Length: 387
Ligand code: PLP
Image (cartoon, rainbow, N blue to C red; front, top):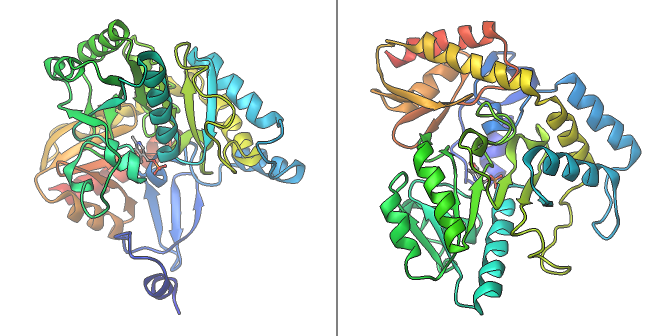
């Protein structure tokens, strides 16, 4: 049986897959089983920070594979401890909990906020405010946190205690905090799945200040926006604010599963022994991969991300079939006249992998080190199919 036939017969039908069976990858190029090549503008949905099979990343992973592949969290291990130090020092945060995905990182943040609220109010504050059009994961609780009705069916009852407000409307969040039952606010600075919607600077600053005044944890979901994606190490760094908690995953380990819930001063001691855990969280191989990724996200690379972002915006100016273009760094959303899904399928046929997002957008998340030649060639294909 072919890969596609095998998949259709034996894989649970949760994915609406594109018509390509990919077999190898190198940098920003993937090759399918028939030898056809594709330029990658998706990075495995923001995961392969330095492209596919990046040689430095492969070497770091391989070295750790030969050293110690797995150890339980009942013991100390150097890669995990070193990675946590790097994240805390660069983000000005205090402690890290490692899991294996974005959803798990957010689950941890939700637990931290609930315990913080319960401890500080004798059990009276446990509501978490999130934004409409957000996306926080696919577990039952992170689906509940996700502010999109489309996710709130079929799998109920969902976890209680989430309140949704419209993004960029300060009066709404102010009102949502009024009852005095809120322990945390969780938001993306750029909503990825929800349509590449960018938060306003003044809104974010006012929300952070409001949270401070009300002793509510200000929590930022950096699962998609973190690890250099938007041109800063973490996207909140564009806004002149510091979260009490942030979560990240996707590009963190550059192609291996890893999530992190990062805690600032207010939250660093909320979780105690036995409160939370994960068998694989902080696994040495994933941690070694993440150390390699993080150590290469320096000012020079971040500047390049900004330059490539400007390059894409300039190249796209005046493209027929384009309604809007926006985003931050190499997380770009293009609202199109034609259905975005049709454009993505046509691009694939023509050798370009792109993603979509809500509000009929084509979403671009190329590897951070993609070449200008690949960008130019990919954009030419995209423009052709947008018209
Ligand atoms: N949060 C955001 C902002 C995301 O974009 C995603 C995934 O797309 C998640 C959380 C969930 O991450 P994961 O699929 O790794 O559980």
